[in-house]
Length: 210
Ligand code: TYD
Image (cartoon, rainbow, N blue to C red; front, side, top):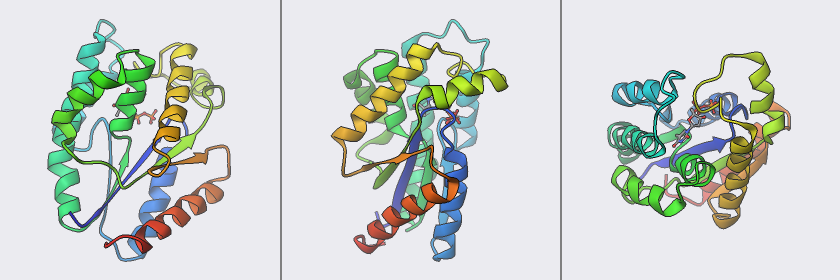
């Protein structure tokens, strides 16, 4: 595999979309073939699964159903979009990937990391991101603010304690996978955050075969 697999993670409302747009332009300008995608979603089948997952009417969804649906969406996304792009030498920028399931389902829902990893083995195989950016934003600066502004989806509607566990879970993962997960303070300006990300990317490209 000769491409580059970049993922962006963070609590809800951390500004991932803006940074993905800037990073896409940065890498395209350097001459790379870039595919931006997201989870849950990224393919027609996975987008349909996404609708089921985030639908506010699906209040009776069990934790295991939710975890399996995220993994199913990821399986399709990995084989239909991510692997072909990487095999073709391209760059994939994914808004969320497996770390989201470990943090949201494993830690915040309390299902445990082991179970989530074993379910997702079928979805991701040996694939791991080359680099992951964690946009760090405390729930009180992000999702709990959003709550006052707009209609929330099923996951966003969770109580403050859930979002705090998501935040703590991300910090825990980032400490364990220091080499892969780069923590960026999401309270910085859009330009500051972008230049920090770009610096990490330049370093990665200089040390890789892409
Ligand atoms: P997303 O569209 O990225 O939401 P946002 O733009 O608000 O960050 O993701 C939808 C929701 O799904 C989000 O609340 C995070 C959650 N999620 C999981 O719980 N597990 C997962 O594996 C993934 C990919 C997302």
